[in-house]
Image 1 (spheres, rainbow, N blue to C red):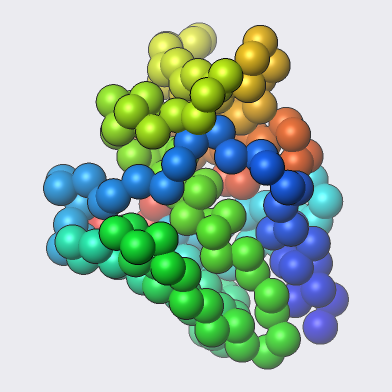
Image 2: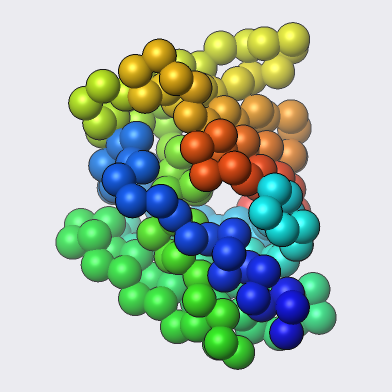
Length: 171
């Protein structure tokens, strides 16, 4: 039960922290899916498997323990911004935060720039040989995404957590 309570803490966002508005699904991932390992650090140290599927207007996510126990499922309609979450075993995941993290890391830069909030900016450069995406509010670095092959590390400075995503499979 400690694992489940720890995940609740990891997903609690602060109010009004958005750097960009929710976005439609890019055409290049419609009809595809990902199997990934999520590893959280910061407030908690936890890992889980996450399966994500994309249709024209819907993102479907299932989070599982490594033992195969379902933790949470969510569906996000990108046209209406309606989120439906089914939390299992008392887990209270913030589905909007999951979608937000996914979009900040894996949506095309041009699309992010079109949906960036006022007083915010996103940049993408190669730093020390690694592609790095940075999100700023004013002059303050809020979020950094570092790409290294099948591993992506998201560092969230405002909410004090790190998320390492290992892409295990694309289908």
